[in-house]
Image (cartoon, rainbow, N blue to C red; front, side):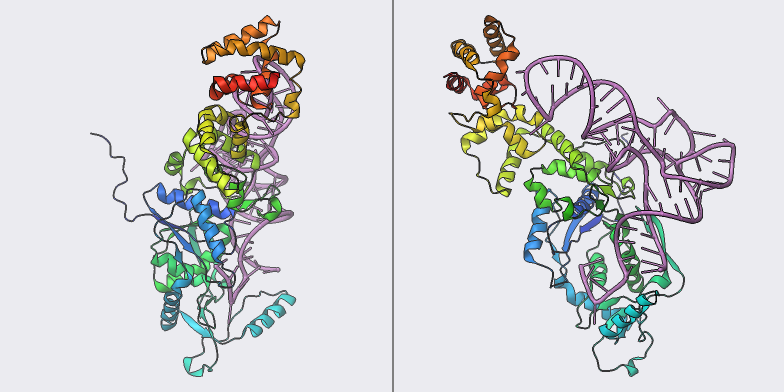
Length: 475
RNA sequence: GGGGCGUUCGUCUAGUGGUCAGGACAUUCGUCUUUCGAACGAAAAACACGGGUUCGAGUCCCGUACGCCCUACCA
């Protein structure tokens, strides 16, 4: 009898979500948050939903929305169903606010922004808490003025609340620290704090994985869950990503947008691996496939302290992913890179050549542009531009040897062993070690000094092109 | 000001009371070689500080320092 390895019918399917606000590029830190949510859901046969938090109409733009979608797509983080627009759900949010009002869990506050601001300034000046206590909390409806109002939740003022977080553990908050946050603005539109809770509930979100800058918000949002009697999702507040100097990753550190990383030529798979490893670990595993990541990813593996972004390690991980990727997949990735950076697309001949050369290129490239750079010998056409460094090895003696080599190449059978033997013999005939011949040969074949093995290049180039290039150089 | 969270090699981290504190990136040195930002090998490198608890603490408790987050009719 085989032991049943599947989980016994789960009480509910895992539903995670990524909820960015469309006010800029997809930040790399947000991308990691999305990745964690995606990994968690995908590893458990759950759903990964996307919600655009566009309730701030002044700051939300369509370009930003598109940039987020593009970024996720590039990273291969596919979401289930259509993205949900939070702004579209304003009526439902307001409905819940009025429900809360009817339950006396919320109240109308007629204090003006000016009054509140004045209060805060005074409190600040006096070194007191700036927590605003509305005088309208317990004023009966009959005494309400006919004036604009906001709807505020009635937060408890005594006792404490403890919330369990899968990353942070049990966190306790004094209720007296909670403010009667605004639910509905004076124009009747919902505020983020309300919208999030209503949407998460309506979307059936079971696990909220988000940045720990929201930890304090969890307590405020908890008020709404309590008042509505809704079941609370599992919480996991993950630490933020810092720049190399330990400050929150920002433009000062260079690239912050996912699109910028794409333009720098980091392959998506390497990016996913690196990002997953930043703040999460699975023993000593450093490099892994998506399938392994999905299988291994768990909330318990997430660390509590912020991680610094390290480009060197990113490059190393990416290099390993390039080396283990399939040739066709890499070609596809290169074409995406060329397109994303506005470069000319590959010709049919270049595609074929690159594909043939790929096994020799991918072992030594860390990024897509490096891969392209190593493959320049196959992309270029005669006559080659010879780099200065490479040209140095093409002195008169070298040219003579190259000229001597071509006849032997003409009737050698075109495989690595023969090529090595023939080249070695020619070098020996001139009293040289093969190493001495390799440099000019490399220059002739590629016009540069950092290339794949000369024999690999010969094989990929083919007999005619190889001989033609050597003759060009020997002339 | 108030509250919350964090602190293991330079960096990412393993570690759940007893380890020579492990791995990876980077660094340095070396080997090989047909170049290389390739490969291989080696070295150096950490428990923020101070008190406890305990036979024994990186692991538990308290405090200090430093850092970060929240404290909006932003999200």
